Image (tube, rainbow, N blue to C red; front, top):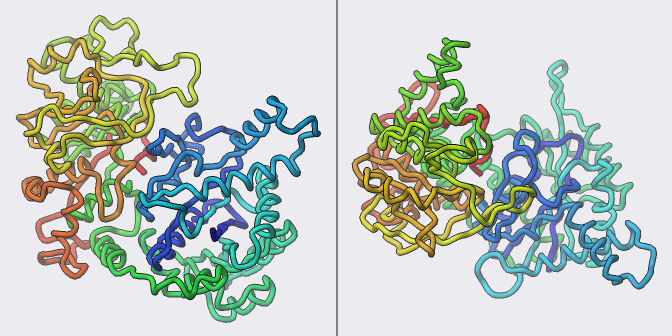
Length: 590
């Protein structure tokens, strides 16, 4: 097994996760099998109980692991399926060591950070690196490890010590360290400054790790004299110093690394030059080119929506609406904000209501679902978004004005959504219905079944505590709401549709977690296609993954393309998309 370690210095947020993902993709396209591990030095057992405002939204894996968002990038770039053990945290390591101590596995020894914690880290890495994640037999060839945080952080010290020991233990030719650092440009002098990276590498070397490559983040490509200076003071060969300068979208990063021959330096360091081939990134390059033509290099584009819009060759415009701004209380307190929110909603070609927790903005989400239902606007509700669509239907169509979820009103006389019986009301962490679950299509002649290729069932990832009340299903269906997908028992509702609506779909699962570049999520693709008048064409292909193949011609969109304002869009128009979200800021679609 070969190991590539990615560390970061100077400041956080440099893009270590994207860099690690891009390195993994590059090595994969060289013909190697790749797996990934993310180390998070925080004490939490996992990311499941962390605030999305503080750490980003949780990414959910097939096995139910609630992990860091970087694992989402690994899965999307490498098209692999990771496990919860691919995310190492301080909490997991200490828990495992303490459990062993309680069982007496250390035979009375004094349990210490060195060697017991550091040994546990190394054993975890070696064990997880051997788990196949690409659907093939046997272990991968290379394991890419990302160490979260910044070199010098107190909480990461045990991991740095462990990785220093690990690099010595696996030996030369089996370990390559890539340090991601910052080379800022001071506006006053306009000069690229190397001192922050020099100090970061000095600190790294002082902790027992020596970088083999430097990946320097900057606003522009490094000048040759800057590379020479970094090489001299950081003891890294000039050809092993690459620039990760600002690009329109992250799909460019693997191409940047390839163009600067980073893969050759890595393969040389791992003694793999003789077995690897030249990286084949033609399809990736074509997709990146299409993305550049359709999207402005600004703004947040949730990956699942981006994948679908690229497949449909449409420019995606995401308008973020705080759901509370749609409510009557806002009309009284801030009428201008209320009016602006409703104008955005009414101008949208499609509406997406994502998952969430708590009752803030729920009434606004219900109003958004009602608007989409009554005005035949394409709608997709995810998790809570599906639940509020059911509540809205019960209130507006069945006339049950007090219909609600017991999450928001425990005493409601018409509980459309209820707490799942197997859930815990005392413990928050790891107690939801999580991971990959099977949904069976009970109605075959529906949009969602067709988007999934007329499959009998589909496996998607879940993360929820509440579900549609099965006792109200017959009443809702008799009024026209179709529960087209259910679990194996037939009692848990998974997919809803309105048959007389162009595209009104709600799903209890989170389809965004399995969306990939070139393999867009079926229901996200349906939303985008319906919003731009392509749904019939997409349904003709029978499966979401076929759309990109059939719609691509030599890496260029079929049809005439023209310049319009600041962005490029297809001649039949761009696409407006709206998130309706109670928090106003949404990070969960990864």
